[in-house]
Amino acid sequence: IYPDLYQGSQAVAQEIAALIRDKQKKKQKCVLGLATGSTPKALYAELVRMHREEKLSFKNVISFNLDEYYPISKNERQSYNRFMKYHLFDHVDIDPKNIHIPDGEVAKDDIKAQAAAYEKKIAAVGGIDLQILGIGKNGHIGFNEPGSSVLSKMRLIALDNSTRIANAYEFSSMAEVPRLAITMGISNILQAKKIVLLAWGGSKAKVIQQSVEEDVTERIPASLLQNHDDVTFVIDESAGVELT
Ligand code: F6R
Image (cartoon, rainbow, N blue to C red; front, side):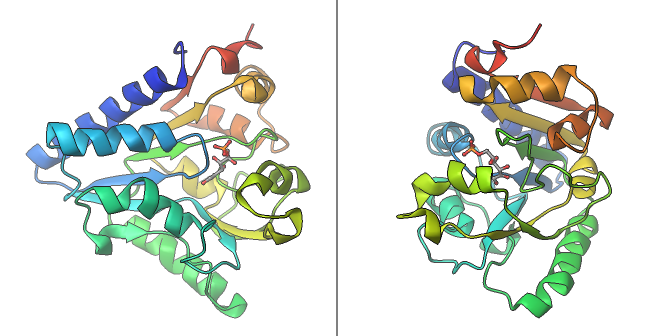
């Protein structure tokens, strides 16, 4: 628990930087699983600063984003493709061919094949070393809404109304918020070697308490992380107020 989101984000940025540098020394790739939304913005800003001021290189980084709205064009302002470029990829030296983000432009009939190919790529590079997560107020991780199975794989999912409302600020009207998204599944997330979930602010306090202190249940997808061997929740004081 950190006093504020900036100190929490700095600590996670340092952990990511240490992992990237350790892998560089060993001449290995560093495979990062990345999230979007308001939560990781300060983390990405800090990584960009470290690239500019502390020579942190992303040349050995391979990234896989968790999710993308569907359907959405890559260039649309609200797309997670655009988000990642704007907040991170355009400002660091990652090789564009090492960036993977679910494709919101794919034909509906091709989603299954693309999802299988995405999972195969993750496996081919040896799995995700460090997965960054945010959390929805309803407990979703990625866009695995409540009820998502612990065995769920990458797929098309209908967004909960609460998620559409939470994300409506990015769009000009509620009607424009996509009803669907492509997301990595819970089983994919649980395969990461290490998971760091970030949460800031009082609006996440209740779900943080439920995820960490209550039963493991598919009704609160983040609670399923209790089954993983190496998970850290990095939160600020306001997100921690409901913890006992
Ligand atoms: C985004 C994602 C979502 C968000 C969650 C919280 O890639 O996977 O699970 O992390 O909806 O969103 P914010 O950070 O906007 O509160």
